[in-house]
Amino acid sequence: MIKVPHLKASVMEFTRFRITENTTGEALLKAISDFENDFLAHQKGIVFHCLAKNDKGEYANILLAEHTAVLTAIEKDIVSNRGALSFLKLIDKTTVDIHYLDIEKEPFFMPEHFSCIEFGTFALKKGNLQQLLSVSEAIEKKYLSRFQNTQLHFIGSLSEDMYAEVTFGTTLEATQQICSGYLSDSNCMPLMEMIDETRMALDFWSVAS
Image (cartoon, rainbow, N blue to C red; front, side, top):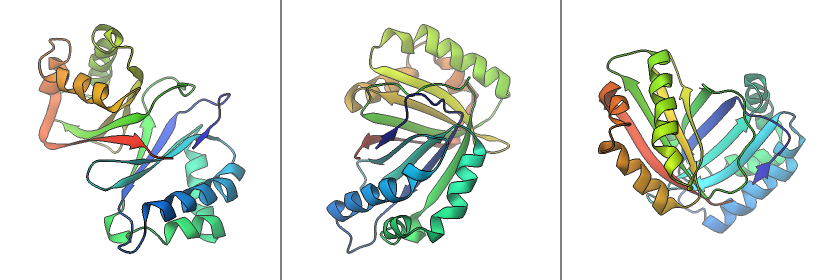
């Protein structure tokens, strides 16, 4: 894991993938360590990086940075770095799903303690970005603030009509329970009414490295 306490994040990359058939979890962790030490540690503007895993055997490479140019530079330089290539060769390329987010929140420092991440993507069936952000702010103030588990929450713009909701939590179980509460809490219902359920995906990820 990389966490730079004096830098603020404004963009995020979230890449979901599976490892190749003959790759072990131990080999992946070693490759991630080399990837961080040999490549990411030398890139300017990185705020946070980790590897996470869900309960389906999938992994996620999660990166937050100061601005989009940081992610662009990483994408350009990664193919020529030995440590990065050692990591990339363990990935099943047919399973890769990359999301780039503009974080719709004032740039922020990463929280100190968390172990899991909720990452959900969706389209809106009604409303617009400003209305979505207003609803999200109300959820933070009137619902998420009740729980010490919630360490960070934000909305990200993915594309013209796709968005992401991201939450960093202290424990996986509590994060899942709080998310389930969206379906019954009156402060969260306006969000549920805006979301197109046919274009929604949600998963929970435990920090692995």
